[in-house]
Length: 320
Image 1 (cartoon, rainbow, N blue to C red):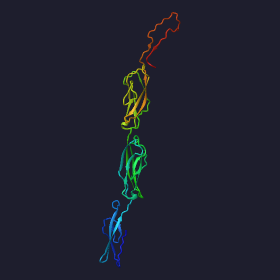
Image 2 (cartoon, rainbow, N blue to C red):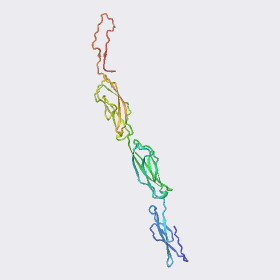
Image 3 (cartoon, rainbow, N blue to C red):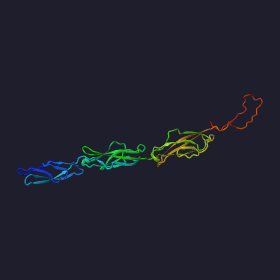
Image 4 (tube, rainbow, N blue to C red):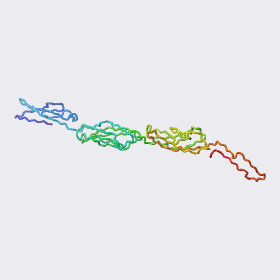
């Protein structure tokens, strides 16, 4: 700025300007040109109260002074800064849509529009949305979570000021997803049939059951059980089916349907069932027997050739 003064003497004296309270930010030349000597920062100091003195060169000399108030105007030279560099939360995967994940906020040291902040996501998300709320915003669920798909959801938050050349700041949002027991055990996709021979010793293994569960922890731990109690078969918690007795194809059914349940250890527990067809196979372990065991026949001496004189009958306990 140019500072001017007048001298009413005739002829007027040469005038010399100076700052009475120079503080290192401003300087004035002898001719009244005021200049800045150091960078100004409105956020640090936005007002300066100076006093300019002018002295003539007459004899005797005379002087005058006036106050000079300088207000520093805002420039959009500060980016928004989030309250936290990283927002962290934890939700169960069955959290409902529109559940609030985080309340976010940022500050900007500028003024006016330069400090007016809007919030957004750096990249579109199928999981999160930002909703203005008061002076800040909230991040809430846009869709359902799925622990089996992702155990951690993350997104970059953006705060943008309203300057003519907007400035931005960023922060991270991390959401840990906890498992809910929402998946039933699934039996392996195999034929559920087996066969064994009679006279197999008690405790013999007939079949191994296998099932998987997409949940984690105890929610994904699978145990097996018979749907109905049995005096013929036993099933271990790990899925091994064994015989409880010795079978005999001559007197026992040829086919058994064993219904097995796979149950996880979640609370509440989820389960699924499968039917195993077990076939009892005969072993040739019996001799034929005539019925009756003794035959007595009387025939005439003139019996013709090819005459039937007796029908023999025999049975065997084996099958097939």
